[in-house]
Amino acid sequence: MFIACSPVQEPSIDPNLQYLFEQRLSPDNALTAPDSFINLSQEIQILKGQLATSDPLPEIIKSTRAIIPKPDTNHQETPTYPPPHQTYNTAPTPKPIIEPTTVTTNTPAYAPRTVTPTVTPTVIPTATPSATDHFNKGVDLYKRGRYREAILEFNSSLKLSPKHPKGYLYRGRALNQSGQTQKGLVDIEFAIRLSPDFHSPYVDQGNILTNLKQYEKATKAYSKAISLRPQEPEAYYHRASLYRLLGIYDKSNFDYSKACSLADRYCNKLTELGICSEFQMKSKHVIWGKATSIRVSVWLQGKQIAEVMTGGRTKINAPYAIDLEICDSNGNSRVGKNLEFKLDKTWARETIRVATGENTMVNLTKSPYR
Image (cartoon, rainbow, N blue to C red; front, side, top):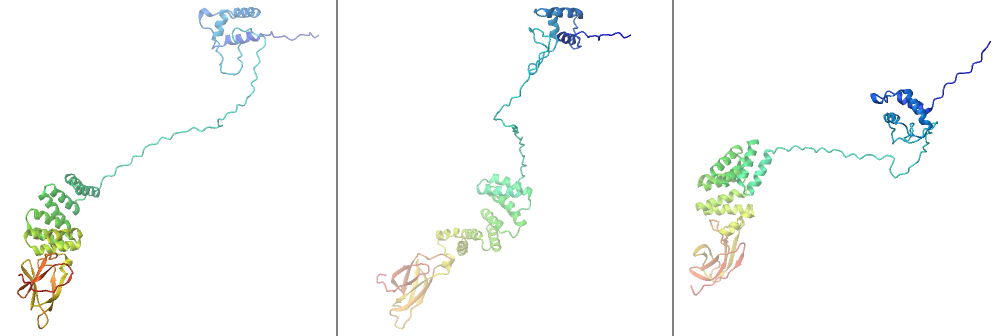
């Protein structure tokens, strides 16, 4: 015998009540305060009565709902919990379908970020000045007349290169110019010991010794410089000045002339002192013509400087010729000076001026006035 049994139907649960129950029973939303605890069955009765009316939820439900986390307002999905002041529907609110929209912009799909690189400055180490650097700077200061500063640079140079002859030479010059003559002489003589064949220190040594009135030593120093470098004019010039100071004019004129032949900058001294140049020493002033006499003599400033015999038998309008030296025995120039003539013992009427390399015809006649 079979008994037909109908299947047991599970009671339907209102979706809203189910949602509230789940939220109420959740550990995160459970009421913990004693004064807010209520019986779960009481809540169900209240909710049932509330669903039948349109009155707002009781305060106890509001407090329960306040514990439920608020949905994210920025989220685009429809919240599963109905917002306040709305009736609870028996069916859940369907989710809105969001149609994708295409937004056209001028912004490129990928805009690379501009990164400004951090530049670390490169520190270039400063090179330590060498002995040559100090020396060159000292020479520049010396030429500008800043002798004390130049001495400091030469000191630094010689500390790095203690056997540099030019360093001692220029420091000696700077010391001499700054009034420390003896110290300067010591440096210059030390430069000579370091480099005996270096001619420049001998010239400076001669200059200092001349100022100290040690003329004999100064002459030897100039002569040594000339022997080392015979084509350097400076030693000739300074030795010529020393010879003139000592009254040795012939040697002085020769040295001045030699200096002029090696460098034009020394030639003004020849004109100033009336000294013959090397070219004038080799030049002559040729004077020729006719004279009625046996002898023709040439006179300069009351002194006879030349004499010749006339030619011919009768000695009347007899020819003569004189090769007159432009320079005297001391090297003094006769250029531009006035010459006079004598016919035997009688002065001639004519006079001329000495010129370099000239060839002058002079017919001499006796002057009746002398």
